[in-house]
Length: 379
Ligand code: P1T
Image 1: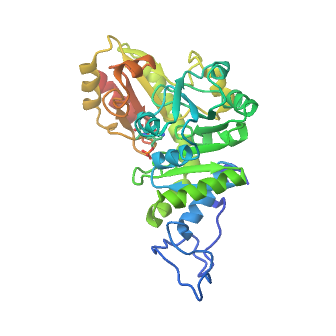
Image 2 (image 1 turned 45 degrees about the horizontal axis):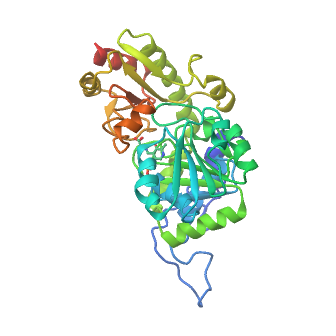
């Protein structure tokens, strides 16, 4: 089955009770048993729920994985991955990543004795100097949030395989429409399904996809034992969202390109961070690794003026100033004061998150309307 068909049919079967084409929302906590243990595969909805199961099958299918797991948020999914580790273990992570992921790693897990190294992964060889006997996991976000750096997943997986480490890839910005990390050597794919997979800014959810049976069993154990699951209504909504992922992504990519090119030609703009430009430092990897360049981009204005950037995001009308990304509607954000405020100023400026940086999640509205909105806000 090809990707565009998988988004609609992958891992799905019609409901056995009445043949419903969409899985019913099984709004139930528990399931009748005829005798202790005599049930139809479902006992309690923290452990299993038929609507969540249908979604988890879809998750596995679109990432070409054998197993999918759904969580109550993207961070809950990341949390489950870190729970595979033990005190004393070390993690090597990209330095430019979502602020909430950084906060989870440093404010929660460092105090349980897990050590995190945040490094640039432009060159996979850089990683090896941080590997020691305690290293267990490499955490990669690509494209990175909000700088749109691209990490070569295959090159990083050569390092993880050589040293017998787990490689997890946060595929939120790309989605499986653009890249499928399991096929490039990753062990775990993670999504904030809140974004493109849900696609309509109405559900907070996380996803993990894996191939290995034992790894899947450990993660299912954590999912049930820690209990950070999502409910059946939300499962239904994300399953519905996935059915149009391919056509939404196609338009996100087209509009993303148009907006990136418009901004790059605007006299007030200093720099546009979008991997589709040949001048982007990781363009060659992006071209090899991704099917297109996505709908996310960031830019800085000349003079790096904090107040001016705030004025621009306030003036935008179609681009709503809001946290989050990946919905059908265009959003703008000011990472230094919003999504990445939990990263100390000194740390975030090292990765390029300066005061004038504005991030855009380019939606699927009319391209001309989006460009006119940016024109008026920059005027
Ligand atoms: O918000 P949540 O569903 O828990 O997902 C966290 C997360 C993980 N990884 C990436 C790459 C993300 O972008 C996010 C969430 N990001 C935002 C809310 C944001 O505006 O960047």
